Image 1 (tube, rainbow, N blue to C red):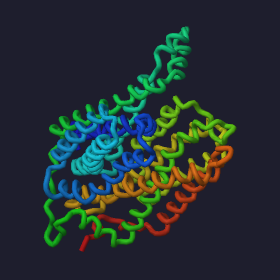
Image 2: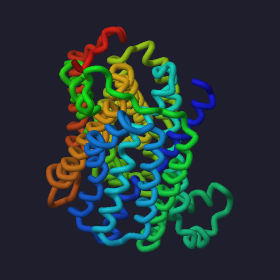
Image 3: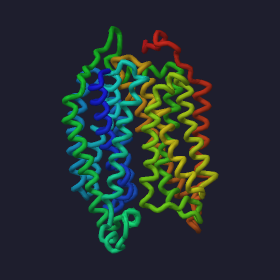
Image 4: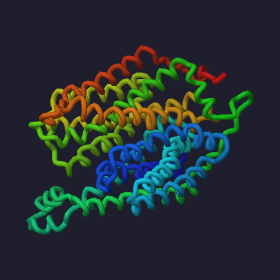
Length: 439
C-alpha cells in the first residue's frame, strides 16, 4: 500500500471515530438534563446497538454486492451528519429519538465499511491494519480532551485569581460547568460530531475506489447469508460467541467505571473528582494507539489465538484490580493502560482475522456479523444488565453503598471463561489454502 493511500485511510479512521467520541461520553448526563425518563433514555442509548444489528442485514449487504464502499460511506455520513447536527437543537423526546435512530442507522454500518475499505487497499493487513486503525483511536482522543477545557466555568476561574500556570490549570480543571450552563454547552458536542461527519462525507470522495464484489458461482446472492453460513465451522462459531462475551465485559467497563472512579473511598470507590473521569479513562485510548503500533508484530509472533487470549486476559487483570485494590488510586489509574491491550489484541485482531478468513465478496457483511456482537448484542446485554446489577443487586438499599468488590468479580470471571473457551476450542486453519467455504 502506498504512503498516500495509507495516509488517506488513516484520516478516514480519525474522522470516523471522532464522530462517535464527540457525543458518546457526555450523552449519559445530557439526556436526564432534557427531562427524559429512564425508559426514554434507554431507548435513545439502544439506538446504537439496534442499528448494528439492522446494518448486518441491509447496509453491509448493499456495500458487498451493489455499491462502491467509499460512495456508500459518503452518502451515509452525509445523512448521519445532518441528523447529528439537528440533535443539537432538539429537546423533545420523539424527535430526539428519531434523529438519533437515523444517525445510528447510517453511521453504525460505516464502522464495518471503513474496515472493508482499509482491508481492500492493503497488501499485508496483519502488518498495516494496526497502523491505520490507530487513527481511529487518535480521533477518539482528539474528540474527548478539548471538551475537558471547553466545559469550564470561566467565571469561577477568574474568581480564583490563580497565580502561575500550575495554579491556573488547577482552577480550570476544578471548575466544570454545571446545571443549565452545562446543558447548553453539551449540545455543541452534537454540532462538532455532525461537522466531522460531513467532513468525512466530503473526504470519502478522495478515498481509494473500493468496488463491490459480485457473488461467485454458486454463492449466495445475499452477502449476510453467506457470512452467516460460515458459523457452521466450529472455530468461527466459537470466536463469534467469545466476541459476544468480550463485548459484554468491555461494556461493563464503560457502564461502571465512572461510578467506581467518582465514588468516595469510604463508599468503596476510588474517590476521583468527576471532572477527571474522562481524562483518566482516556489513558486507555492513548495506550491503545501504542498497542495498535505493535499489533502487526505481535500477531506474527504470537498468532491469532494467543494474541486474542492476551487481549481478553487484560479484562481479567483490570477487573481483578478493581475488585481487590479499589482504594489504590495510582494502581487504578495506571491499569487504564490495559484498555489498549483489551481492544487492540482482541477486537482489532478479530477484524483482521475476519478479513483473512472470510470470502472477499462478503467481507463487509462478515465485519457486520461480528459487529452484531461487538456493537450490537454485547452492548444491548450490558446496557440491560449492568444498571440493574449496580442499582438493585449490589447497592445496599439502606446505606446506598455499592458492593464494587463482588460486582467486578462478574466481568472478571466472564472474561476468564471466554479466554479458556478460546484456548480450548478455537482452532483456525493454519494456512489460507485451508480457509473454509460457505458451501
